[in-house]
Image (cartoon, rainbow, N blue to C red; front, side, top):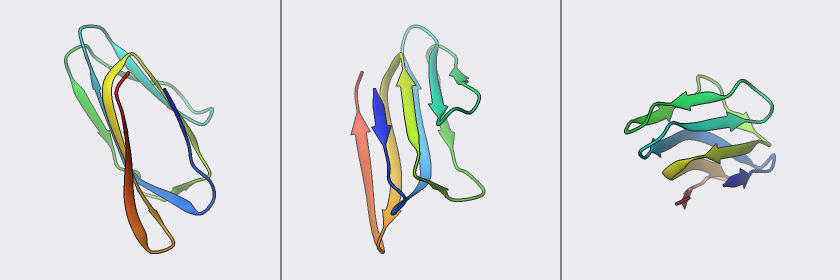
Length: 79
């Protein structure tokens, strides 16, 4: 699945879970992060990520926490 955020939405954390096989997360065109099968991974950037596209491949579920205009929200998905 793909989540697209605009410049008004600041990413605070990204969590994803791999099922029976390895899964991946890619933020924009940066290096692909692999999640070993049966494990979860949380990315909490030291800086604010804005205007990003996040691609989840092979995850069983994920959640992205974000802030926009002083509002805290999240988006979830199951693939």
